[in-house]
Length: 468
Image (cartoon, rainbow, N blue to C red; front, side, top):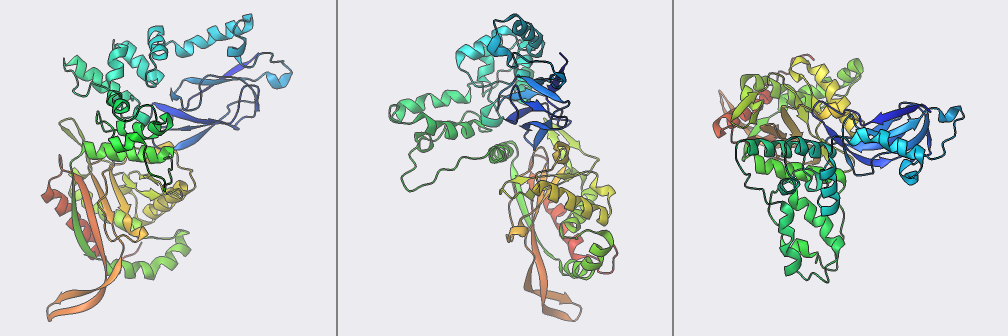
């Protein structure tokens, strides 16, 4: 028979593994080319994996919720099945004692060669947390014992050890350092049952509450009130969906990584509002795109980033990496209430029409769940419009590894004192608050406030006679 191997696709430059969310097919099912076989997820977006050939699914090598490295074989398709070939044993593990199945099992071994038997054996017998094949491979190659592996704090989903976690551990070990967080977060759970009625507490109540504690918080134990599972009678308990768990993990990690400082400014955006009101009809007719305030905010950000490039940087240990490309992240709310940040790459190379097209395209793709993994990669600074939902101002959390995020509030008409050569006067103006959260390890208050004031001035000095 002709067997085609379906592999975990590469989802982006920095993405090395993905989680299997759901299989749409099972062994014995027929598939056609480009028909969806399974759904996968990274920490950025969800995607569907299509079949690369017509045929019959003969083998599925990973289960739902497994984390699989890119390039790994996840299923096999018999392309000869439609040509009249009979498939007597589509599921190899079931017929493990038959000769053909044994051959298939031997053929499957190379897919797991990178994980040594001792590691697999210890994983199965110890009841430890889940480790992806990629993490186990690195551990084996670097000579990390399984006992050491269990002590590495995990920052991944549900406390899993990620590639970054184990590489940091390897680096620290090579320098003769023993990481202070070596006692695993799971150790903190052991005293809890002894102190909190171990007999009457349902195990199911522990599972959803213990996992978030280990995500990005290091070795902090769960609060007793939470781990006890006593929520009272008049409550509704809702499980976080996968994306909400990831957002929570990223936000906690950002707060633990960067000392946040937030500065505020106020801007009179009357000229900008009037200009948009004047041109939006003609703009849509000529360009086929609706112009919102977002591309105007991004345009002002770009001008100021060129003057203050340190805001477009990241921190690697004690090295400041200033990015030459200006890739603006654009926080976008999804219909589910979750948030995603698609990125406008090389935004400084686009004019206002180009920015408008990118903003609309990415926003629509996000709302329709059609973003590609690369659409959320390599942002260098982020804009979030909290005014969309009526907020006057906000204190946004930095999108790691960036060092700053700008929030723009709702535009409101207010009476404002206007200074003129002939004296002060009061007028009704369109006013808006801006806030900038920045990483105080790199950006001091003077620089952060100066950058924010520069953005406010760009908006206030908007040219009402400009074109687009």
